Length: 440
Ligand code: XUL
Ligand code: CO
Image 1 (spheres, rainbow, N blue to C red):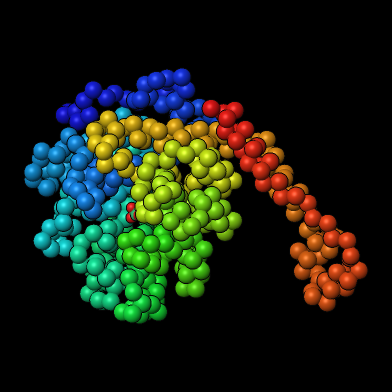
Image 2: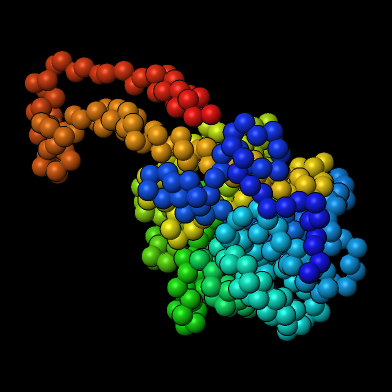
């Protein structure tokens, strides 16, 4: 078979002292951490759109990425070569999963029917490649934001014909995800938001979004798709205001419309920071509400206000992300999908590997550190003690619902000696630094 990534062989674990950019320093798939292998914990996935379809365009310049399938001009031949190359990449990297949008993998035709035929042809090839390689689909989704018809949104478009087209597209994307046995299906509200309220009926748009998601849940039942439905929050970009702003906003929306039983979250680092949150905040909020299912692993740039989708290298972030994920009992209905791209100037095929390797190493190390933090238990113990006033006396009565304002007033009137303890933030930060430094 034609080899696309010549000169790059299977990426091996060489340990932390290795200088080989094409080797893992920390990700050792079979190494056991807390009773599970790293591979089982981390469930890495490659994002098809960034790694195979995206070319490195930005608003000021054309594609820069050099890819082995670039010279093929026929769109379907190119799509097939790209998919074949993708599986060579997955196998050489040793990732278990991948994710795609419908339009990443197959070109659009002149009509929806022709587009669907193109998709079917590529799905057939994908299925064969999955069977021969053992690589699995983490999730599928539909691109409801690239084509100009979605200029006003998809499920929240002012144009009912566009709503119908989007429904047809999601129906098909769910069918192929089901056919490829996807662990889940993602709803990211690409243009589901607004630019100005001056032309927007927000109430109808939100009601329609809920109608659309109910239709999706009904259709999943109809075709027997039991994979996890994820919503991926993002506060802005491409629209000024995206309705799926952050986890708290989306949970409120889902509960308002009776949708919360069908969905969990796919949380992306760069979306969390655009919403003004840390990644740990979003994961923590989702976890305590039983809604944490999957992660789009990347990072933004502190100085830029848009979604740069960089590969995750910040150990502080990966450690605290893995801390939340471990406390969640892992991501059994999801995985760690690298929704990330090498920088536009990192344009060689080698950079495709190197960028994933550093992301995988950063999460592997984060896993080891977080496991140590939990085993040691100092952080958890500190938090437990900080709230210990609620386990006895008046605090226990508050929690048990035994007292109201009158009883609490009685208590406060006779309690003239309130004493607070230090929050010890800096001491805890020093502790986290110690866990990180000792593990490197
Ligand atoms: C966009 C984004 C998407 C979703 C899938 O910011 O993250 O790629 O992950 O549609
Ligand atoms: Co994403």
